[in-house]
Length: 338
Length: 262
Image (cartoon, rainbow over all chains, first blue to last red; front, side, top):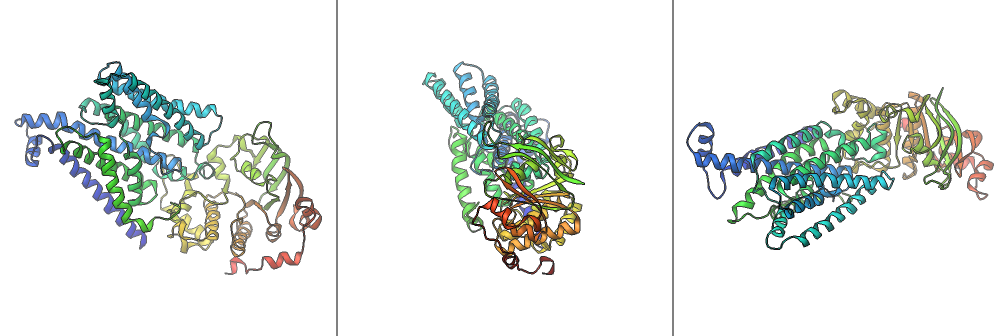
């Protein structure tokens, strides 16, 4: 009886969030400085000619940025959840092993060097991945395979990258490149193009399918090395696989959208408050909720003012409000040990 | 037939550090209950963890069911032996059913998750342990004793022949200690499983009618049947001269009715 009720509640949550995602996705295509009615959107989509301006706005501008927003939200949320479960620490974000700080250095370097936006993305991705590799190398140098040493190595390398970033910002021209670096570091989908989708989509798809296929096992990985290993799970293999996937997801998202704070930390918490701890449920819910959350954030970032508000500012504000409401509603069900 | 065969086992946590296990040699036969007894720091947990495959840099050889531990993959080990720590790290939000299902992972492929058959198997094991009423409860809602019994049930779900328990009664009150010990006794008798566990209480070894290994400073001081080994001389050599031994007290201390009669 209890299980039936639980399953029904789960079904309701998944249906609601899926429908909301579809709704906000359509909304993101019609809302903006040039408003398009929903009738026009559907007429345009099902007709071969006419609506040239609308077609251009939707297909060339809003569709790529909305897809990238959804993919970025999914990627950062799932990465956050994966790290929180694997490292048994609910306060970690996808930047745990330094991927975002590394990506920031890559992007800042390419901006100072005057490279094009393609190179900014490429450098951000490359430096993000290299930073995580450096973290793993430092952890290996300590000859200790514990998650604590890996986390501390992430703090060391991430901190070092933060210092490098400060140095690059110091060298940057205050009028031009420094402003660009600062804006990049706050995140934006403004320069999203369909070619970015062609790169981001396959990475996110492959990573998501892999993670969904092992989603139940992540519960066992979250028990820690001793318990996981004696139950038959190769803990270090799964931890490495999760780090690779979270790094690819975060680095590729950050490469196209800049660093976006808060989402990777807060969405997993919201999702856990909704569906519990079972990663078989939290992972798919995190994907749906993260995508929905980021599309809403993108809409908010471009509707309030003529100029776009940086994503990190919106995620911070919007995330706080949702989190406070959920926490208030569920305050009695959270134990002291959680 | 030997389930555990340890030869010249030496272990130290740091290179050039103190020898925590010092050239240990012993064996445990299949279907027996084996209890490690000794002071804190005598090497009980280190030995338990080495046998469970959790400590890698040991010297010497450990054979489990005739196979060298070093040559067994993690999955193969989990099919032969199950390990129960002092307290599971599983978060309180999981239901007992969810937790017990984790024990079925050693029979699955990379992408698989539990099916109806696995749930039926958990139900069977829960019935044996008489904990079916706990299955829908969250781990956070059950008592420490029930949680330890659930953990041992998880080891049975794993279908392993060797069950390794690290101080299974250390955090339990005397009633729950008895419940856990009774379960071990019943499972060993009815299913022929081999148990190796560490304990601070020599009475437990007597109650379990077990083989005892008395450990001191990483060496085995004495080994044999509990009724032969647990005597004032051997206990004094482990715990010091102040030890007071009374058979009567030992039986009075474990005086609850058997779990099977509950």
